[in-house]
Length: 456
Image (cartoon, rainbow, N blue to C red; front, side, top):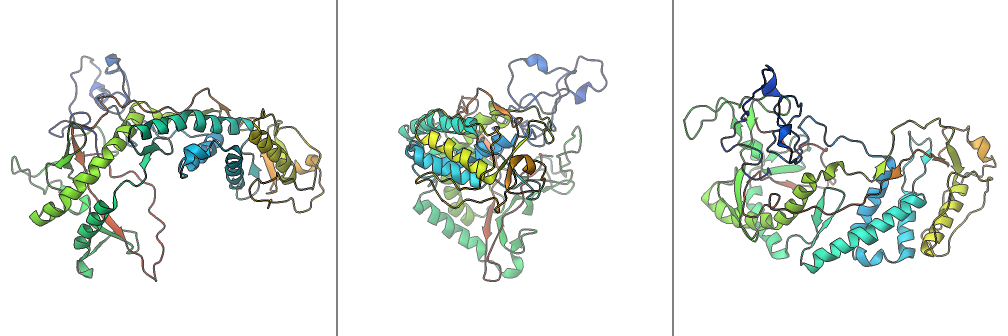
């Protein structure tokens, strides 16, 4: 799906250039501004080297600015993952107030921390600052926002940053309508089935824009009757010079309670298909509109670059501040921290403080699974362990794991320029079915990729 007409692409699909006053012969290639919003129109000048038209406030992976490529710290990654996992639990807004249950979830998250460098060592996750931050953000930020949405009759919720979800999205009647309609597309001879490339005949493409795209030099223009040529672009990166998908126009009512498909959908153009599929797809798309609004609101606010943790990026691998804890010593500190949390006490466990080696087990009463990974009976001291690289039974504690910025997640602002209500959208429709058999019982999913390339 692209943004509303006029916000990203010209109506005629051409890439227009603004008049230039600069004598710079390369000026016409430089008249671009970031895809995030700005009130300073002076940015649209020839001495700025940005990559996307000023009229687009939304970033795209193919902009050339690497807007989605800023690496996150390890600390931020596991705190984000934990928060999203908690918010996917049923009745999570009530359950997070149970500190004992919350501590159980923390233990489960900590136990899932992966071995690093091919299983040679562990890196500390979940110190006192992490626990405080994750709990505070869930209780004082996410919880009241989601409860406010529910009071307003909305079921959508924030998932991982920049992603919005809604459980029980489609009611059972509409779901069965879609299933029965799709069955009419599946009843084709085996020789004519369009299996998705690389899927080992597990993914059957039913409606796909690549089956009937514009082919430059061959597809004729309905206006002139001449073959359509690729638009002139400033470069080839991200633009196809051979093909172009054909979007359909979806008109959303001003109230957002209805969608009308104003043009045909590629692969679903016969009268019988239109009468069968279009009403179903219109209902489903209408349910997506609030989700799209929130995603666009996040993008406009630059939430794709939102970070909770700041780190210098310096390598602390051989830092003098590196402390190594055996599993047993880490276990003692970790359980003490969880007990402090359960009792509502100040969290003051210092994982960077060296301890004498112990071999006993420590288990808090009633906290999760009592099975803990030991240290294989080793009697070595911590000082001796420090020199034992490649030991998966130690935790490496770095002082340079990054610190939390005084910043929490905040909901997007759904302003009029973001809302899709009352706008006509260009939408690409795909339908596919995953078909498993006793000989092919599992589908692992496709690879991460950008959906299509830029219009060209």
